[in-house]
Image 1: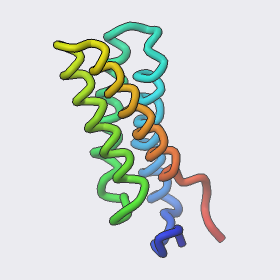
Image 2: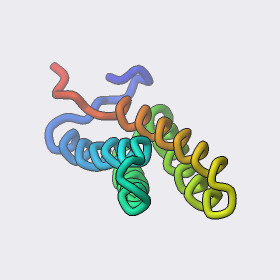
Image 3: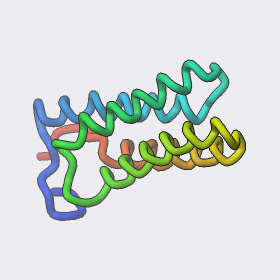
Image 4: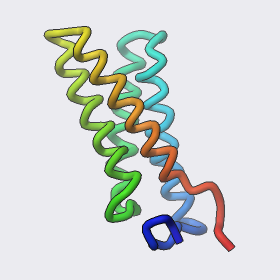
Length: 114
């Protein structure tokens, strides 16, 4: 049971949730570190969005997925805003990356519950 009274994923459900959340975590780190350039940041953004979409069917009604989705939306907004105002766009992208990283980390299944 999770903190919201929902069952934690086990077995193949946990594996199918680990892959998209792992993508979102890696993508968030690629956005946050930002030492590899724009191309890697855009790939990171795509990984966050894809991880968010793929984890949606296994997501609880409330909780970590809301953070992940808000982070993905802020990261997209940051990328668009940075085309006109780089500083504000960068701040939005960092805020989105942090939210996505926290949401994906909270939702990541660590192992089977007994």
